Amino acid sequence: MRSSTTAEIRQFVQERFPQFGLNKQKEIVRLLAEIDRRDHCGFDAILLERHYEQKDFLAIKSFLLKRRFPTLTATERASVTYLPCDFLKVQQPGPEAPGEGALFQPKNIYVEKSVSDCGLAERLSCAFPEARVSEIDRYKDFVSRQPEFDLREYNQRLDNVFIIREQFDFFQECPCSAGASSCGYHIMNAGFGCGYDCEYCFLQGYTNAPGILFPGNLDEFFSRFREYYRPGMRLGTGQFTDSLMFDHITRFSSELVGFFRQFPDVVFEFKTKSCNIEHLLRSPASPNIQVSWTLNPERIISSVEHKTASLQERLDAAVQCAKAGFRVGFHFDPIIIYDGWQKEYGELIKEVFNSISVEGIGWISLGGLRMTKTLRQVIEARFPHGLLLNAEQIMETDGKIRYPVRVRREIYRTMIEKIKASGYSGELYLCMEDPELNREVGIRSFGCGRAAPCAG
Image (cartoon, rainbow, N blue to C red; front, side, top):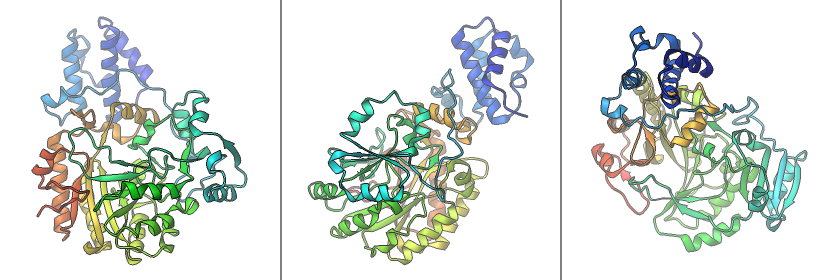
């Protein structure tokens, strides 16, 4: 049975519950739509006949909340405050959106005047001879003169590349959630924007960036790092872009490896969902350089992480990097629960350790599916039939929508047990979780940017 349209459900509610005001009707429409989207049961079959005649709005809402969130406790359902009453206009990404194995073909290359003679500008111009190359004074001024951006422009972000001179945000500490244990991670802002379309990606909320941004002054990053440097720190480029997706064009990896090998007490990480490692492997490996992959079962990769490398491609790339002498790492983040998740994540962990020796792994991180209220609305607009929207989550005190803490506790204990059973006792940490939950699952506090040893 097909899912009903919002218009059909709205008309049904208006006819059945004319006694309720507009806002109450919207709440009922939202809950009916959520249930129908997940169960495909038909909105007119969701409410029992006695509820059609029910005049008590709270009783109807309570019934629908229990139907929509059957595994939550009554207290947890009271924390479901993130469901918007209105629906954003659907702006689904087009089928032409490029990703792994597809061609990245920008139509426009904008170069700030101050970096017009940089090697990156020349490489991009040569790589895409049909693209229109324009010189601009400053990216911020250029953007301020453009019409207001929306999701349509975000879906077309790969049409435009900006080569800019970064002047301020060269490095920053990881923006952890309020109250979360610090992971001590530092971000090198060597790019903004990604060509993949992971449904949970927080970058979808940045609809004010009309393209992919690359810095044309990587040498200035290096001079600034000598001032920013802290002994024992770890940092990487994978926060606001995929570290390797564009590397065959930017060739940043060789410059980064060459520079950071001079700081043997610093761990530099390339974080990716790509298998684009050809240029990276041309650089001699260094013990302090790590290449890490975000991992999920293939079911999640194929249905949620659109245009990315497959699980097997990622593991094959990890094997090649390990053989070349690089440390490797893995981020099981976000972990997404569904029927059979324990079994499939367990099989995933076995695949990892069957492929990679535990001695070659720098660290592993775990994190549950989370998002802001705004991001959830964007996900609904871009992927209205995606499985992430069916998650039973609540609004937490840090402003993030998450699985309840009791569920996350089970997730982490399950994952840690399976990881330990594979013989791994190296560094392991939770991403964006508070100290109490870390203690409950056996993760010790850590500092100086280094993760805690796996609970043992």
